Image (cartoon, rainbow, N blue to C red; front, side, top):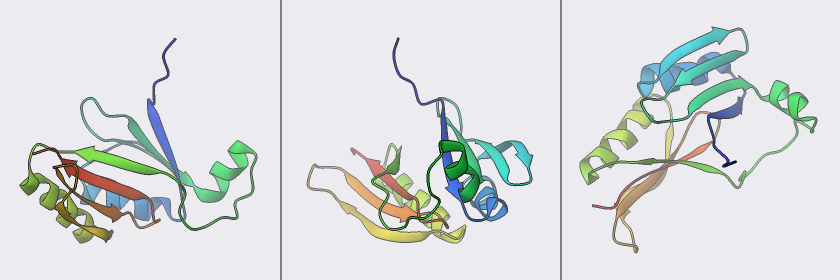
Length: 129
């Protein structure tokens, strides 16, 4: 058996806001939507993204919903060019996200930056070019 991440579930404060960010703002396709739940298809070859209310995710896992700060987790989107990195970063901001770290040349030779979605989840956008 090999471990696969077929679905990434994010606990969010406002499912409708998060759905708008990922679908309308960043081009995902809504696969399912119910009150307090949405499944977003991110594109060919990508895991699906499930948006579920924060408290419901905590309850599902059997843990406290209290918590803030860095979650020790980030999602990564790899592109083919520096221009594509900049385009994704701009789209995220236009959709309601925030730049956490401006895209810049990286010490490992590539080009990358970080943005956060409206719930504070970190996304790294990078290229090796």
